[in-house]
Length: 383
Ligand SMILES: *Cc1c(COP(=O)(O)O)cnc(C)c1O
Image (cartoon, rainbow, N blue to C red; front, side, top):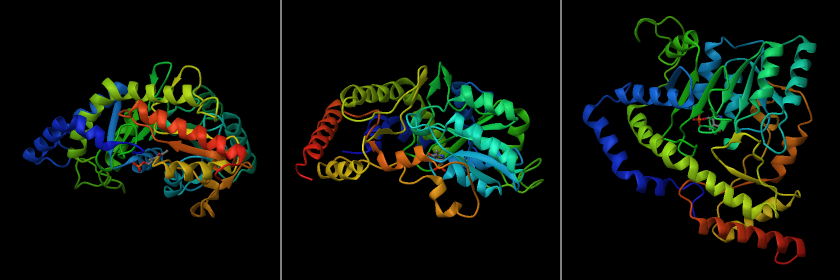
């Protein structure tokens, strides 16, 4: 059994993907070919924003957004403590100080209460200037943008939506990547919409920022690549990846998003009595980058994972530690809480196989095994 079955997806899309790659090879427009522009137009329309700019990966997308806003030394950037490293790495790379904020225990996303407390703490300390909230759509569910936007407005902060895992999700029909002042995503193969290598994209309605980002991602170009007006980087989506993504995006919209939600629903129906299943808020729709369960008691998770592995069922721990515990942030961060929810989650979470091509029999096999293992652990058998 695969954790996320990209082989099956390729089997289904092979004819179209091979043809798309072959067209790029024939045209040899490997950089900035027409497929890149076509993909950007399609994605912007789907997300419901004016502009989409593709780039090299989801981490660069975050860095480029922060560069366009001029974020750097002396600036505080608020980041959820429970997320992938890149959400905090990007502000640190720009010279800013990441300020870690505890998350909600049930949705895994940044806690609006803890966020406001953290902002007040930074304002009181008068050392850093609060600038940006990085809100992450973790595991596929959008963060609580209704409340995050209120807080951002109250304190005059910008929202950077890290939707690397959230592409395709929505809140009452409004799509992920459109909630931030800038939204970003990643096309890393295992993300909800993945390519066959690295890739990323930036979304915004703001014309000025778009011009800056387009310059920063091509060596700080002015009129062209050989007229350089600022220090930038080289971060573009390859034409081959854009061509692959165009095929995959169609399938994502027409089939995959609905299908993966059906898989998640099956898990929920069968598992909710035995273990804590992910909470999706009312009116919110997830794109299920991960299906992450929470063990009721600490100490069970590792045994559960071990026993599942014995049955050839893969599972992964996202994430084993909070960002505040990462050595890389030792010297460049500000702590604003005891991170008790991050701690609770890092001890208990386990992500199960999920993808749009998953067989209901596999879901049943996984559920049956989880229930048996939990029962064994309870009664003290076979541990
Ligand atoms: C994957 C991921 C990123 C980075 O994306 P890459 O394309 O791998 O650089 C950033 N933030 C989150 C939350 C992610 O899951």
